[in-house]
Length: 405
Image (cartoon, rainbow, N blue to C red; front, side, top):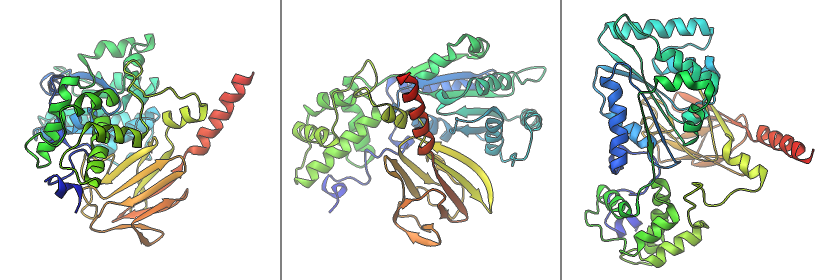
């Protein structure tokens, strides 16, 4: 018996993969989505949404995308550590072009022609950039220029930038004053309040099949808030662990002791609301490991590169559904096909019970640690793995040398 059967659930209530069905509409989430929707009816719509890691920004974007009408054409760029030319290529790839052998001036001409063509056909075009806090100043300046493309009547590109709180600081730079003047609306998605926690958990349990909010005992909610800071992703992690602990002990409900046991198992401290982190990392290598990408994947189709993405340590889901970090639109790829898990020792690929399987070196695998250069086959697509850790270690050594000086 799984804990789903034990608690009368039809699916996992606290999975970390963004799923619009599970989105809890707090007042601030509803307002953030309303701001996104304003880009459709404002011809010069330019919106910036910020929030802490795990605050639900990506899920909000997925909910917004799921409800767009047929007259809206959109591109979503989530790999943002790119040069200006690579960024333009990423946009055009999302719109169905193969722009990898083009110069920047050619890319701009293709994009400009595409936007004007869509406008003449009565289509609205939206550019959505997730993880925008990683954009360089040059790319942000490119976005400013794109936001100015217009006909004799109106702008032809709507823009949504979504990112972590650092994005607010970046946009406040004097060098980006002109870009900031183009922004129509800005909103910061904060953590859930302590009062929201019970409703948030009850909502997710109900979506997963348990309509009565009676699994988590009342005293749990204050403790969950204390250790999660109201960050939805952290609430999910803590609640899922607590459910497993209660299930293992054959309990019908989750008690406060189960929450505390989960905290101990996760080795969490009380959430530091002023910093947005549990503890400050004193070790330079550890600091860089959590702030810089460690895994890079090159996605190929029939031998041609279609995308290159880099990721921080953690879990990355690959699949056909647009809510995945790596979305591959192919009939041979399952909705949630596989996951990459990057940690201190490297990267592991794991099959998520896909229909057509995961292959490494022509051998089907369920779970396997990858070596740099390994090629993972998912249907007709290949994923080439690169470990970026050596570059991080070099940067750290240079920083240590500078500090010694």
